[in-house]
Image 1 (cartoon, helix red, strand yellow):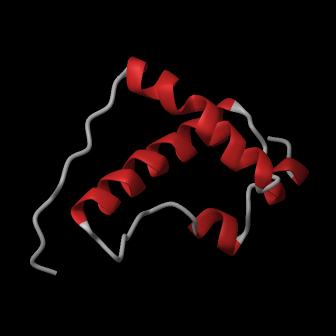
Image 2 (cartoon, helix red, strand yellow; image 1 turned 180 degrees about the vertical axis):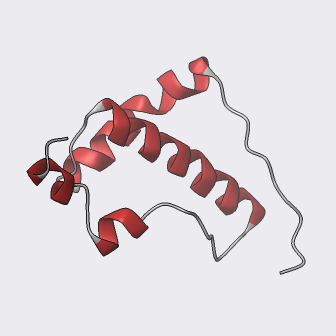
Amino acid sequence: MKKNLIIVDFDKEKLEKIKPTVLKILTENKIETNPTQLSLASALYFLCEKAKQEKTKIIFTGQGPDILLGGYHMYQKNQY
């Protein structure tokens, strides 16, 4: 792809600042607001903000395949 890697730094202060916005986005989209979802959504929020600043139009991430191809709900049926 011949693209430079862009690293997005954030810390606890920045996380606390965006937390209300991310929680609102999750709630409006009927997504659970548990710690796992909040952490995933927060990282994606920072990524999207950086992409917007860089005028990036396409983002590839590793998030999504589990939900698309089977979902975490299938694991609830099999208690190991």
